[in-house]
Length: 411
Image (tube, rainbow, N blue to C red):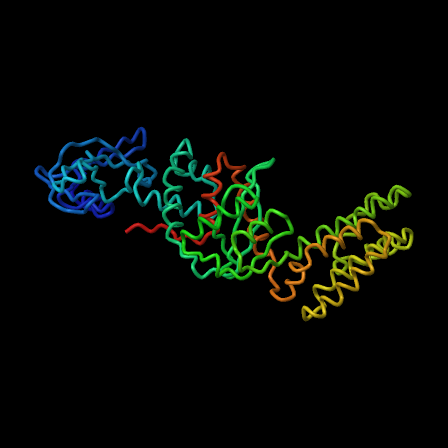
């Protein structure tokens, strides 16, 4: 191959004197290209640890690195990696890392950057492995995970004051992760295994290492689980809790469905009408409205429960101040206690038990909507990859896709 091609490849891979391309071999049958690099006799190297210069070679070790394909030819760089004798007396004989690779990697920086960019844009790692001609995606994870850890360790969360906590699952069963979201930046800021108060403590500890001041967190949105409440009180002492309104409405809908089930014992007409009762009244078409009215007329208890649910939901949209919301909610609770509908009465007790967190919504107006949206994206990522084999892979992909990490752009 002529000198022009050698110069082109030297420029492309950042190969400079005293390093040089010794030989380029092309195997057309296997569609492979091997670029063999050497260094001049007598070359002295910089110590990778203390950065001092002018150290002699102690020993060499043959290594090769995969780079992006050249004209559909798999391409490798080959080099006798050098161990140097550091004269400082502290470093021993460290391994010098060539400029085209990261320490310990078997791929070029450009190859790694290309792979990470594909994964960050939404392509599952196992699909990227097929695209770049790697039989196993394990080799790709070996540089994706260190990249994510390094970039995440550079994050600064010292300005975070409003957070949301939500749980997500890695696979079927009780395999949960706690997702912490910055409500102002709308980004994931932490992912830890578990969904209890210990998981929240672990999340806060990791975030403190990245600048978070727990005393500066003023607002937190969570569901009404005892573990989350305990976790916030123990780790974020100055945070006001807002119970996510969607998690408040969920048990109310369950109470309505419980009344439906009780009524269905006396008639088959509502056994399969759950969707009609739980669907937002504003989204019903004319035919559905007629069916709903027929159900309410035929089953008075269910009709009364339905009206109570709609009135409670309207408090969130019609109350302009906390004072008005408190007044309307107290009226509703009094109505619920007298309703003789046990599921509704049980829900009323839940609201009373979580009164401050429920009422604080009308001050903070924050919800878990952002966190729920992120959770939806996480589950979509999981489905597209057909699950993740271990916890590190799952955490890594969430950070890479949803924690606003920079694209790797090697120079």
